[in-house]
Amino acid sequence: MTTMMEGFLPFEHEPYFNFRDGAVAQAQQEAFRQVREQYVGRTFPLIVGGQEAQGSGTFEVRNPADTREVVWRFQNATSEQLQQAVEAAQAAFEEWRFSDPFQRASIFKRAAELLRARRMELNAVMTLENGKNWPEADGEVAESVDHFEVFAREALRWAQGKPVYPMPDEHVTTVYEPLGVVACISPWNFPSAIPLGMALGAIAAGNTVIWKPARETPLSSYLMVELLFEAGLPRGVIQFLTGTDDVLGDPLVDHPGVRMIAFTGSKEIGCRIYERAARVQPGQRWLKRVIAEMGGKDPTVVCADGDLDAAAAGIVQAAFGYAGQKCSACSRVIAEESVYDALLEKVTALARQLKVGLPEDNADLGPVIHPGSAERIMGFVERGQQSARLVLGGYVPDMGERQGGYVSPTIFADVPPSDPLFQEEIFGPVLAFTRARDWQHAIELANDSEYGLTAAFYSRDPRKIEEARKRLHVGNLYINRKCTGALSGTHAFGGYGMSGTNAKVGGPDYLFWFLQTKTVAQRY
Image (cartoon, rainbow, N blue to C red; front, side):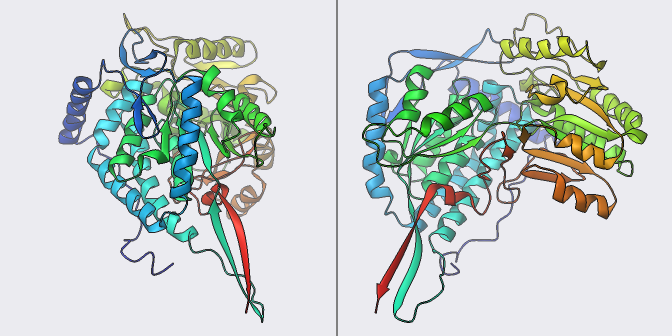
């Protein structure tokens, strides 16, 4: 591995832009102007067999900050094009599977450089597609740069194989080989980092990819695919398909030519994929592999000895960043009785300062992805007032003529552990506060969930911290910091329970999910 890694500088996370700097802010504003000039009103193609293709028609992508605005259009793929895409991916696999891992790493490194030069452009595209403000969009695009750097190194590391215990008369090796065609099905809330992480895991391992982005956010994905091609990736390695669920939902999962499904999205869809993929279709010669990341109901536990100011700041950032539309978002605060009221007051005061507005203007809080999502969230709010105490928000802000799913930052206090506010993933800017008798009880309440993705734990006591490390049932536990903001290569991300299969994107074991193991024994 040392030889293959020569020429790689030590890995460092991509730094974020400082938008408080006037020159940086002006450059980002200019990027919005250029994106509107270059992309708004255009129609983008499918990519099948390395060629651009038109579908059976197009669909509109609307700006969630004002749904009256159609920003761009994409194709509806046909069933025939799905078949063509799988066949093209299978054909490309026969060559890509034997590609030099150093070639793969070199492509990823080149892509990282190209993306660094276009970060503000990708920030602006993402904001217009899914309503992230500037720091939220920039954090995701910076994570995408990190993905390229991390997977370049992982491609080389896994190519080394692993040593085995020796035999006196045999030479034995354990090596890892790719699987085949991987369908990557991604959500709208992280439209570049999530599909890119899944796709790079597949490609770094030598597989080929069917890339299916969310209908709400296809351009963030399309530009990332084109960037990979510009960096030197053979065009047949990725098939880019957009369209309707009746063509690209069950039929994509069921297709006998698809070897693996990598999915991020809701629990309901993830469970459906997991079930359908278990069926062996006619002509299928393998058991399909599935990785799924399916959401969370993430708690922050605050002990009596914790730093309340740090906890309050972390809670507000994790609960209301991107309007709570993160699977890792803090949606439950569980605090010891003695500090409960003081913490609630601090969190409420900070949340009250958040301004709802246009993400393109870098408001603190923008819209949720759909007006329908806002209606669903407000349903939780209305029902929650019957069982808990509304402390802040709980209304739809007046945005004038703009049409979008805006919801005010909302906090409920004294939420019972059995309440939907405590148990169900709301995926919006709604935060539930619940009292705990003591810190042990707080851990029990934190574990009272079918999900197990992230959690934060605030305490200065090493004994309590050690107990939290052992007992909190989550895939990502953060001590004395917020429960969002996992960094690729450092915070391997993936949860327990109904949060998914714990594949841990960005971690040292992630590529194993995209590989199969071969043992070769040669007698002397």
